[in-house]
Amino acid sequence: MRAVRYHETGGPDVLRVDEGVPIPEPKADEVRIDVRAAGVNPVDTYFREGAYEPATLPMIPGSDFAGVVDAVGGDVTEWAVGDRVFGTGLGNWNQGSYAEYAVAGADALAPLPTGVSFAEGAAVALVGVTAWRALLDHGNLEPAATCLVHGGSGGVGHVAVQLADATGATVTTTAREAYHDRLRTLGADAVLDYRREDLADAIVEAGAPDVILDHRVDDYVGLDVEVAAPGATVVAIGNTDAAATLPDVPGARAKELTVALMSMYNTPDFGDVLGRLARLLADGRLAPDVERSYALEEAADAQRAVVEESFFGKLVVEP
Ligand SMILES: NC(=O)c1ccc[n+]([C@@H]2O[C@H](COP(=O)([O-])OP(=O)(O)OC[C@H]3O[C@@H](n4cnc5c(N)ncnc54)[C@H](OP(=O)(O)O)[C@@H]3O)[C@@H](O)[C@H]2O)c1
Image 1 (cartoon, rainbow, N blue to C red):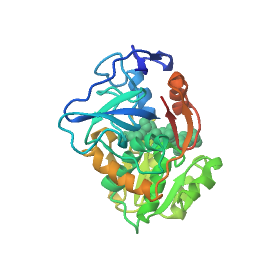
Image 2 (cartoon, rainbow, N blue to C red; image 1 turned 135 degrees about the vertical axis):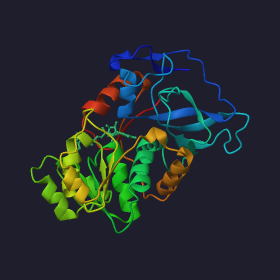
Image 3 (cartoon, helix red, strand yellow; image 1 turned 90 degrees about the vertical axis):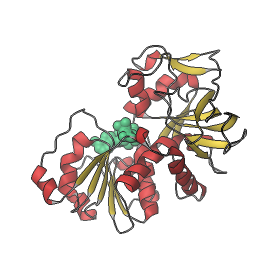
């Protein structure tokens, strides 16, 4: 098969398309997917750079996949050849999805609803599981709550806005001006430019948040403490600098805030969360936005773009 691989860790140019890569065989509890689309995520670049040791080199990047079940392991009863599916969790300890075929655990995928494209399925998997776990599992978001999503135009952000809206919560998000109308259409009640100097005041004016999804915790943990409602939960999913300092411990203590740090890779049951996302995709309450699609040969461009360029929603690779 054809697959994007890196034979050493490093910059985007270590990615190359290899021909004749052996088609992977599913183990007893796995399925093989004929990959039609793979999501592009910032974490793909961290793995490629060697921030986390890959189990083996050469390595195929890509956590997210959508495609058609092509073969099933001997113990798999819930999937059949020809099923349209989407899933996530590949890409470091397991070979990834920027390839014509990939294998995944049978419990780490869900049916891709009719009318949802492969590109949309691949786009929503990792960011959807992340947003679900952050807002619902860690944040316990409920309809009477106010939710702040930092960076609403990003992969996680634009799905988090839709999930928060689907719960019935009041949703505030931040983004550059160009994306404000689209975020209102996705369900945001207030959209604020993250560059404005009175950002904290504007967030509080829109409603002190009970749940905050923070993808740049080193930049925003101080603001989070300042704007949070008493008893709020700050869910930290990302950072730009490895160290983050809580500048106002008494303030956080007085409000009895919870700061929860999470990794999507620790999701206990991927299939369960993906199945819930599939129901929202099926009835149109969740619609991932695919900004651009790349060929396998363009994987380096896709990985450059995901960390360097401004775009709305998601980028995908289509083998
Ligand atoms: N812990 C986990 O399980 C987990 C899971 C998924 C992602 N993450 C992490 O979460 C982060 C976001 O992931 P993603 O896939 O959503 O990335 P993404 O698609 O690149 O989105 C990042 C967003 O941040 C916005 N942004 C840039 N500067 C900002 C600022 N100063 N304030 C607020 N927003 C700003 C960008 O908007 P512009 O277009 O305006 O620049 C963009 O919309 C990454 O660090 C990723 O590694 C963690």
